[in-house]
Length: 176
Image 1 (cartoon, rainbow, N blue to C red):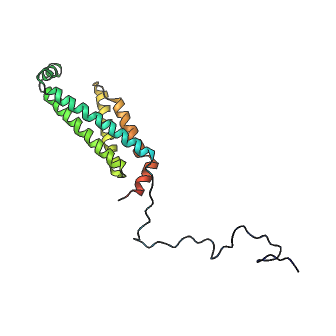
Image 2 (tube, rainbow, N blue to C red):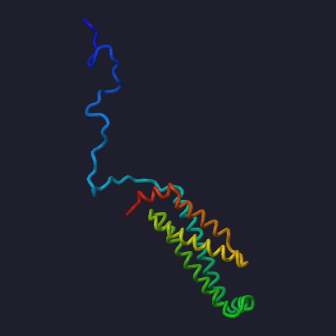
Image 3 (spheres, rainbow, N blue to C red):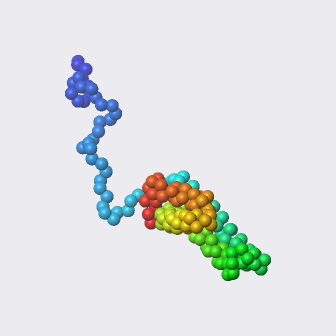
């Protein structure tokens, strides 16, 4: 009695595992256009979380500073001090500036929340605000009135995190 392998040619090494069936090299069946894709849950990247948290903190800081400026510039003593230092009419300008800071801070918080929940337009809107802040800071520094380089740096880092390649890839999976 000869010892032959159970299948295949004699003296040929058998591959590991069970025999494969069907034609090799073909992937899954194509999906019809418009067919729903299976929902694959993806985790939010740390860059999105960090950028959104930075937007929340920066926006909250702007809201607080804006409200404090608006309230303090509304008092008679502060209006008098601002008028003596900067000229007539600047007391009401400080109130308007405070309200504007608070509104922009609130918008930053809203856009940060949108970016955090997977809406890329929130990150793009924050990038636009950062660009405007960059122009304003450069103008302030050039005119000699100073400028918040720390706040600008904070905005640039938050925007860079929200628009990094990993964040953009995640936003593409969150399209609604």
